Image (cartoon, rainbow, N blue to C red; front, side):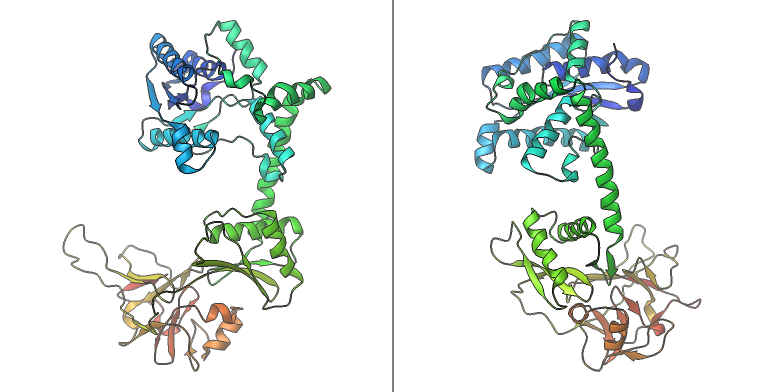
Length: 457
């Protein structure tokens, strides 16, 4: 009997997460039997959480003995999870998981292994699917147990019954976690009561739940990609058209909200509030609560602008913002010395951007890159330029275009007055030479005679 083919791990350094339970012991054994043929360098890691007292120490000693007998290097990590959970204000299981995956990350980041293999299997996927369906979830929640980064799950296609049969056939020793039988834990109740009931209804219930999870995850990925492709990007802002189908609108909005708030713990209620803007007049806005906004220093707002919803973070400024900052084009410094860097012109107000000179073999684009970076002739900017925001009377002669007021230029580019007021410009008097992230003046474009090419963005 063979649990999986290790071909996908050929030539890799694989570290098995070993708890001592039957699943992880079988995983380690399956790798051990194939390691030589596949050129796999095998090791194991055991995390002792300090949760179950003597039983937890028994598990650690078992793993040490097993790896010693099998000639497999073992790394043991110990932690006082109950105390750590109290300090963090988390549940013990949540903290234990964090400790485990923190240990795995250290292995991978320290290049002690190429991959960390965990013993999650098909029944684990089925249990997770049922738990999330009962709690309430969409198709995104069906991404039950996935592989990512250097974390792999070779047993996802195996059921618990198949793993136990493998252990019996190979006469493999293992230890039992006494808490696994306690049905006061939701997952244990699903494992010992709910899933067996499903199996009585249909003998392949577990496999069908796994297949459903995979199909739902595939469809969710397609819908997410489609939703993101419908987002309109103007001057660095992401805008969601109000006429998108509901399923795409919600996904696109959530994507934008998370981008602004570094993930954010947004809920369906937040999305429902944003959706109300679809029937609101242009100019209407709402505040979207942020879970970490304890001191009111930052707010996320959703605006209805024309036929789009746009999200914007607004910060309370505690220091006065200068009306303008002198503009200095990035210049080479001490080019004759090896290993020196190009000087960077860094600006933080009115919003962050940089100016730097390109290496001789650098980008040859003459105008823009992905609508964010502007390529310019650094020597074409006149002395006395400043960085500021727009003012009445500003004019620009855009790249290969006719001279016009900055206000009309921004309107033609469908840039809202709200955004237009925040965009940094490089100007001398009322003459605009660059609107950062949007466009350059024709007079500062790169030409065959340009000696110093620069990038603004």
